[in-house]
Image 1 (spheres, rainbow over the protein chains, first blue to last red):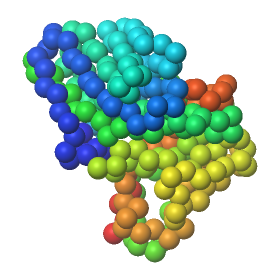
Image 2 (image 1 turned 180 degrees about the vertical axis):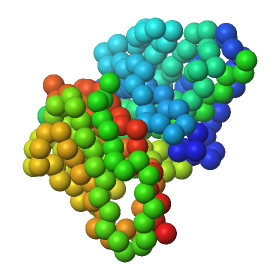
Image 3 (image 1 turned 60 degrees about the horizontal axis):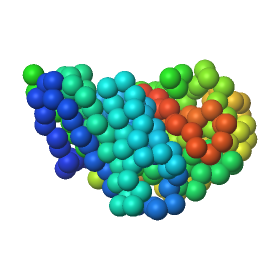
Image 4 (image 1 turned 60 degrees about the vertical axis):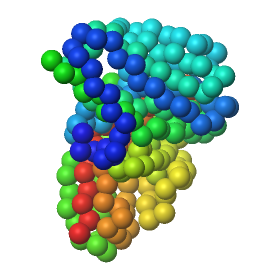
Length: 116
Length: 114
């Protein structure tokens, strides 16, 4: 999409395949993680979240895996559809406080393209 | 759903002019945020608010000010716009139940400073 980086990592998949989008996060003290989807010309849309006391969480067609040992987060999308084409961001919560709510740091995103 | 609207959605202005962007929420959430999104930098926090008249700086606050006089509105002002402030600006909110909360985003304002 035109809102985001010109040199984003890209992932191209065939419709119906499963997609895996990866994210390396920076802070071992991060305690909360979110995946967002951003379509061209729109704001980021919440997909799924996970707290650091979990290593897996499932939603509708999506699964997030968290590996704290290597500070890695992944988003799996089952049976990928053309409507899944977008930029996907991971965000980590660092030093959230009661006075600020969550304090998120965002990755730069991965462009997912689904080919019919 | 964030229940957020942003206005204007698009704006072109000249260097040195003041600009105010408005964020309006219908959800009565306690926390509100302003981000900018630029190629190569992702989303970066400008300012945030944790209640009416309670605001604080984010990582890229220079050249920006904010105000929150009522729960539903969070204004971002560029006192004297510069070309480096050309960007897409997103407002976000979160309910205010604690520190580990999802943030929900508005549709964005595309600002071009000539």
